[in-house]
Image (cartoon, rainbow, N blue to C red; front, side, top):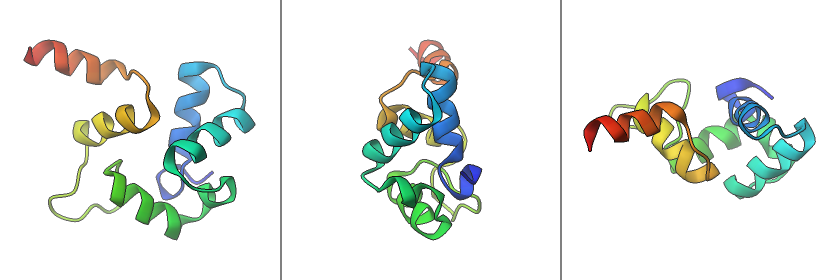
Amino acid sequence: MGGMRGAGDLVARMQMSKGMRIEEAKAYVAKKLSVGIEDLTDPFIMNEVRTDLGIGVMTPLPGSPKGIEAKFNIARVLDIDISCVKRFIKRTS
Protein backbone atom coordinates (compact mmCIF):
# COMPACT_ATOMS: atom_id res chain seq x y z
CA MET A 1 0.00 0.00 0.00
CA GLY A 2 2.98 2.32 0.21
CA GLY A 3 3.09 3.32 3.88
CA MET A 4 2.97 7.11 4.25
CA ARG A 5 3.41 7.56 0.51
CA GLY A 6 -0.03 5.98 0.13
CA ALA A 7 -2.42 4.81 2.79
CA GLY A 8 -0.63 1.63 3.88
CA ASP A 9 -0.05 2.91 7.39
CA LEU A 10 -3.75 3.72 7.79
CA VAL A 11 -4.86 0.37 6.39
CA ALA A 12 -2.41 -1.47 8.68
CA ARG A 13 -3.68 0.56 11.65
CA MET A 14 -7.24 -0.60 10.93
CA GLN A 15 -6.09 -4.20 10.55
CA MET A 16 -4.31 -4.13 13.90
CA SER A 17 -6.71 -2.01 15.93
CA LYS A 18 -10.00 -3.44 14.63
CA GLY A 19 -8.91 -6.88 13.46
CA MET A 20 -10.06 -6.15 9.90
CA ARG A 21 -8.96 -8.20 6.95
CA ILE A 22 -7.01 -6.25 4.34
CA GLU A 23 -9.88 -5.78 1.86
CA GLU A 24 -12.22 -4.63 4.64
CA ALA A 25 -9.56 -2.25 5.98
CA LYS A 26 -8.91 -0.79 2.51
CA ALA A 27 -12.63 -0.21 1.96
CA TYR A 28 -13.01 1.42 5.39
CA VAL A 29 -10.04 3.76 4.92
CA ALA A 30 -11.08 4.67 1.36
CA LYS A 31 -14.58 5.53 2.56
CA LYS A 32 -13.28 7.65 5.47
CA LEU A 33 -10.86 9.51 3.17
CA SER A 34 -13.51 9.89 0.43
CA VAL A 35 -11.34 8.27 -2.23
CA GLY A 36 -11.54 5.11 -4.29
CA ILE A 37 -9.76 1.97 -3.12
CA GLU A 38 -7.44 2.20 -6.13
CA ASP A 39 -6.43 5.73 -5.04
CA LEU A 40 -5.01 4.46 -1.75
CA THR A 41 -1.81 3.41 -3.50
CA ASP A 42 -1.38 6.53 -5.62
CA PRO A 43 1.27 8.68 -3.90
CA PHE A 44 0.21 11.88 -5.68
CA ILE A 45 -3.47 11.60 -4.77
CA MET A 46 -2.69 10.46 -1.24
CA ASN A 47 -0.19 13.27 -0.67
CA GLU A 48 -2.95 15.75 -1.50
CA VAL A 49 -5.53 13.93 0.65
CA ARG A 50 -3.12 13.55 3.57
CA THR A 51 -2.17 17.23 3.35
CA ASP A 52 -5.80 18.37 3.18
CA LEU A 53 -6.79 16.21 6.18
CA GLY A 54 -3.62 16.94 8.16
CA ILE A 55 -2.81 13.27 8.69
CA GLY A 56 0.90 13.44 7.94
CA VAL A 57 3.03 13.25 4.81
CA MET A 58 6.56 12.09 4.07
CA THR A 59 7.98 15.59 3.68
CA PRO A 60 5.77 17.99 5.64
CA LEU A 61 5.81 21.68 4.86
CA PRO A 62 6.44 24.17 7.66
CA GLY A 63 3.34 24.55 9.80
CA SER A 64 1.75 21.31 8.62
CA PRO A 65 0.68 18.68 11.17
CA LYS A 66 3.26 16.09 12.18
CA GLY A 67 3.82 13.85 15.17
CA ILE A 68 1.09 13.81 17.79
CA GLU A 69 -0.95 16.45 15.94
CA ALA A 70 -1.15 14.20 12.87
CA LYS A 71 -2.14 11.28 15.12
CA PHE A 72 -4.96 13.36 16.61
CA ASN A 73 -6.18 13.99 13.08
CA ILE A 74 -5.86 10.31 12.12
CA ALA A 75 -7.94 9.33 15.16
CA ARG A 76 -10.60 11.87 14.18
CA VAL A 77 -10.69 11.01 10.48
CA LEU A 78 -10.71 7.22 10.95
CA ASP A 79 -13.00 7.42 13.97
CA ILE A 80 -10.70 5.27 16.14
CA ASP A 81 -8.94 5.44 19.48
CA ILE A 82 -5.16 5.76 19.42
CA SER A 83 -3.54 5.00 22.76
CA CYS A 84 -0.91 7.76 22.65
CA VAL A 85 -3.60 10.31 21.80
CA LYS A 86 -5.71 9.13 24.74
CA ARG A 87 -2.66 9.32 27.06
CA PHE A 88 -1.82 12.82 25.82
CA ILE A 89 -5.38 14.01 26.47
CA LYS A 90 -5.34 12.42 29.92
CA ARG A 91 -2.04 14.13 30.85
CA THR A 92 -3.20 17.55 29.67
CA SER A 93 -6.59 17.41 31.38
